[in-house]
Structure formats: C-alpha cells, structure tokens
Image (cartoon, rainbow, N blue to C red; front, top):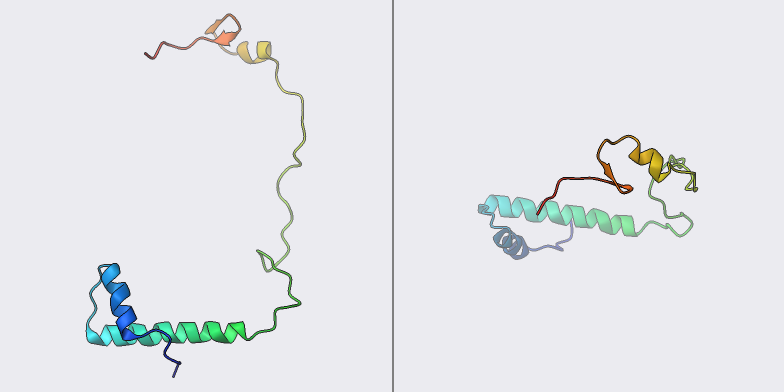
Length: 97
C-alpha cells in the first residue's frame, strides 16, 4: 500500500474545484490511485541521474531544418510582373474603407 500523500479531503477539494461529483467509493479509489502515482514518482527520485545528460529525445535526432543563410530574392519588378494590378511600383488593391 502506498504512503498517503493525498488525502480523501484533498480529492474532494479538487473535485469541487473541477465541479465533479464522486461517490464515496470513487473518492477512495482516486485517493488510492493518486497516492500510488505519487509513490512511484518518489521511487523515480531515488534514481542516480547525475551522469545522464538532459535531452528532449531518447534517440539522437538529426536537424531536419535547412541552414539559415541569405540567398538572392526576386526583385520588385519580377514580383510585380505577375500581377495585372500594379500602380506606381506597388500592388493595387481595392479600397477597404
């Protein structure tokens, strides 16, 4: 049996905050389950992880992103050449207001 870290009263309090209703049997069951989970976390804290590097993945992941480098882009004339609505070097759009 797990050490009681969470009490039935705390389960009732959280249930009330979440606007959930449980019968007595469910409250006891959730209290027991939450205590088992927290007891397991206590066991994990006993592990020696000093030599283990922090990582986001358990396997190495190659960088799939392209290198961030500056490349030539289209000129303003090239961009505007694809539109029939051009006025004084800009796209011409309908008036909104």
